[in-house]
Image (cartoon, rainbow over all chains, first blue to last red; front, side, top):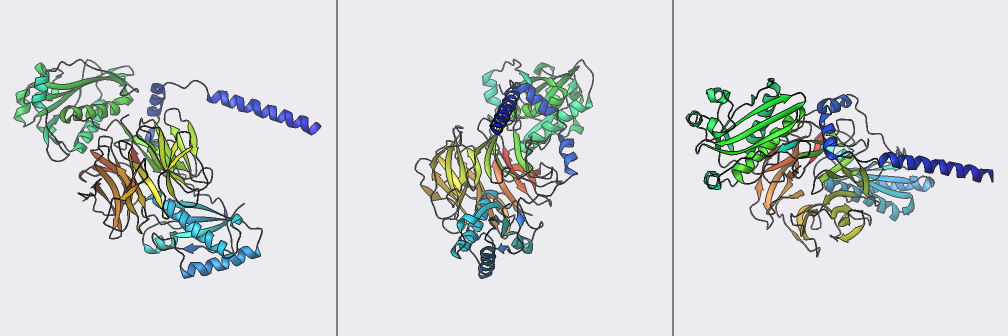
Amino acid sequence: MKAMQTLKLVLIALFLCSSLIGCAKSTPQMDQEDVGKSDMSQPSEVKGADEGSMKAEVVPTHDDIAGMERINFDFDQFTLSAEARSILGNNAKYLQANSGTNVVIEGHCDERGSDEYNLALGESRALAAKNYLVSLGISAKRLSVISYGEEKPLSKGTGESVWAQNRRAEFKAIK
Amino acid sequence: MLMRWFMICFFCLVLPWSALAATEIEISSPGEQSIPLALTRLLPNKGPESAQISGEFNEVLDADLDLSGLFRFVDPEAFLDDAQRIGLYSIQVDFPQWRLLGSETLIKGTYKIEGDKLTIEARLFDVVNRKLLTGRRYVGEAKDVRRMAHAFADLVLKELTGEEGPFSARIAYISDLSGDKELWLMDVDGKRPIRLTNHRSIVLNPDFSPRGKEILFTSYRANNPDLYRKEIYTGKEAKLSYKQGLNVAGRMSPNGREIALTLSKDGNPEIYLIGTTGRIRKRITDSWGIDSDPSWSPDGSQIAFVSNRQGNPHIFIADTFSGQAARLTTQGKYNATPAWGPKGERIAFTRQSGGQFDIYTINIDGTDERRLTFGPGNSEHPRWSPDGRFIVYSSDKGGNRAIYVMRNDGTGARRLTKLDSDCRHPAWSPRW
């Protein structure tokens, strides 16, 4: 009973908060001229330059799994090579042994070509890996996919050895 | 109406239309003809002098008009004393002096500073026929001087070619200057960059709504590539499409009522149309392969896109109504990022040849393919200016990837962004 009342109070408080935020957001918009002017007044060069000095690395959303190796692909391809299949076979064994681990498969491309096409290609790579693991008996429910296209290269730079590393699917534990 | 951020007073200039018709100069494509132009510096009109105002106006106007490829500039070192005299009316201009220098057109103007207020009057004269062609008075603040110069450059092109310039527009692009890939906006000469997003994730694929002032983009903010829209002036942002998998390459239709985008909710990337609320209206493609990267024809009846349904990625054109698609490109093994030109006849795209990417244009019937860039490095992501005169794109020829602009025939290329960050995926706004 007491718990219910507390819950009620919390809900009311939340409601009030959200309506306050709502109000704050729905204050009449400044007319475009004013806003446009204030935009112009921003020190355009300095702003970006200031922040440029504190470069931050992309924080990985998911953890690497020690027992699961990444696989690589040929340029503009998402078919699995013999080597990729054998790695996936090992990964499937790991997943069978660790039935509590759910995995997100990240598909990646090298930096060449269209961003949009590479997003699609990265997804096809992740799906190819997923489908193969499913064919080896891993439940599809444990496997999700996400494509990062060419946006998260493993190593920066140019040249076939760099690009070859970046064309990959990685296996990360879902937290 | 045209520009809300500063007032424009249309200065009443009475032009006899017969004279105008006689002096109009026919220009079919940039770079083909050059008009001798004398561009004088603004002079102070009863007020404090500011070398910065006159210098900045001159620099912006000079760069815009030079990019147009329409002009041959008369060397300012050769200017005679008329360049130092205020001349806002044809009767005040010593035309024979300018004829002597071989000039056929002349730009003169004045500025006046009153407190925070800046007034610039600019004029374009026809030296041969001793006529005032056009003029404007711009009223704003000192910080608006670049916009005033861009606006006058647009007007000069309109007067001489019948088609307004695109210099008052903006360019959206992706830069990692802040440490993450975020959405940025800059003037068309690369100046005054402003960061618009703070997602601290990955932001991708910007595109403007047909009326400008609103940008579509994809962001991984919620750990999935979702499609967002953002109002530039209010900063308001909304998630528009967030289906499982890809919600990428969103492109608003010319009438602004629909968005073409790539969704992979069913496990294979296909192009769909969604309404402005995000609800799926229609599926455009249906193939086993990848279909992505839609670009609308100016009338909205067709959509160009990339597909690898016949093996390698090629450009296809689909009918928006029936979904029926035909292949456009036949050469090369990797063709991508189609951008349908605003005039409707040509499509710009990227092709990989000899290990590097370059920009090409082609007629929509597959004829008259032309290569515009020839390395070094990779040139990618072409997008047209709203008048079709220019193409903005990204290139890594300077080391880091940066945004460049060139004329639609590949000439006049220049870099717009600095080399201190990775800049990519530009989109030229409609006229602002």
